[in-house]
Image (tube, rainbow, N blue to C red; front, side, top):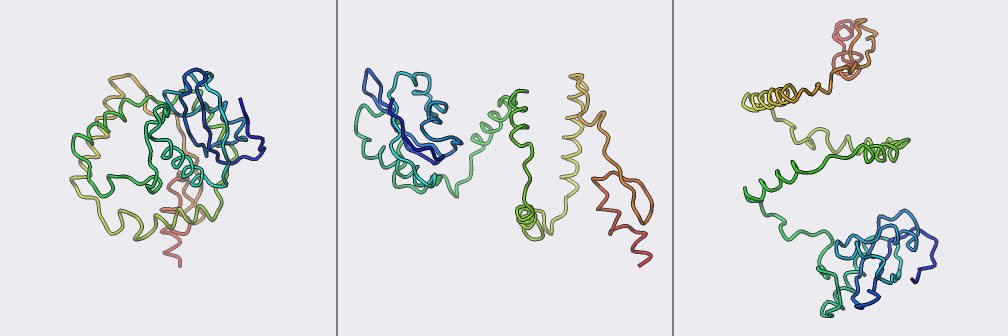
Length: 233
């Protein structure tokens, strides 16, 4: 196997040639966290055809790029240039299209399509405990910068909020009430304890009215928004 000598972590384009049939697969990768010549043999491609027989191919890193967009464009160009070759294994070619552009932009989904999406979500397997642990470890110690938090807040504040200027109708309230009752009933039938059981929210004391309240609702009714403070102002 031929390895690309670079030690930097960059998006890359690679090719695999079957040792017997000479069929070949072209791909790119931008989510790598290790140098390309290490990452490729751990990644083993996203192709469902190639991945199971990865070791039957000779792999080569063709080129590295500074951005994932450049790597993707180059990969698609190579696939396009070899599209008529019967030995090419790639099943799709998006050369010339804007990246991630959808052919269905502006089109509404049919009711059948919506129902299929609902069914697919219901059948989706939940994360295993091991996967949850890995996600937890991966996020451990990460801190969202103040600038990022402010941008997130600005994107959902005022007129940017989808509920800005709107009020919840009685019909919507009733639908939520029925859905919650159904959820609770399912928990009872399956003998599953409610997630909130045993959870105790931290409590803090308001310096104005001296009441102890749950920390998650403190800023809404107490502190600077405390009625006692406003009356004494």
